[in-house]
Length: 113
Length: 112
Image 1 (cartoon, rainbow over the protein chains, first blue to last red):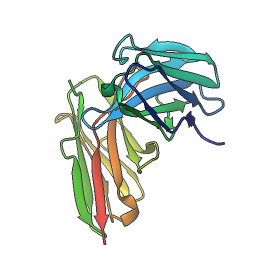
Image 2: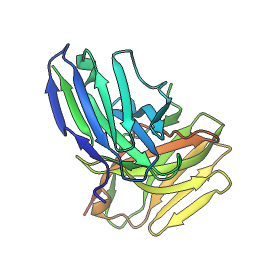
Image 3: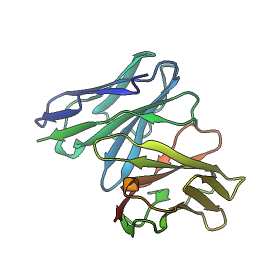
């Protein structure tokens, strides 16, 4: 298996622009998680899905952030409009069963100028 | 409010010695704890876990200890190897939830 796939690996954009991050989970996994990593707060859970349904989005920082999972093999995290404080590494992870080992993608490093 | 705290941002250990990484938590509902390891430009990978019904779990060179009364867990790596140099994240979850709460990470450097 190729593991969790994220794209793009790096994204540089200007403040106010829309940013879309993409994730393909491991086939057969029924949970998908979006995290954000910053120096100050470590790994923060933004939102997670079970069987494509959002279960908990309490970690989404603002209405500027939205996430979708239209099918079992694809999810997006969108930021509109982006701000410099959104600069971070965003990880997608998937698992079979909620607390089973989560497999992380390589992350997307987002820089908002 | 950080429910999972890793108060040491970095640790440097000589090869062959023991590395001890610490983690404290505040939520008494947490009952499952994990350690993840992260190399640069890669996503975190699962290392070892422990349930609250145990106070120790061992896997090769890695041992996790849990002290529930102190709300403290630690990861011991012995002997440490240069390949262990990475960022280590502690994570916790509460029963009946599917989400993990991560700490801020500790960067371990193992030098020859």
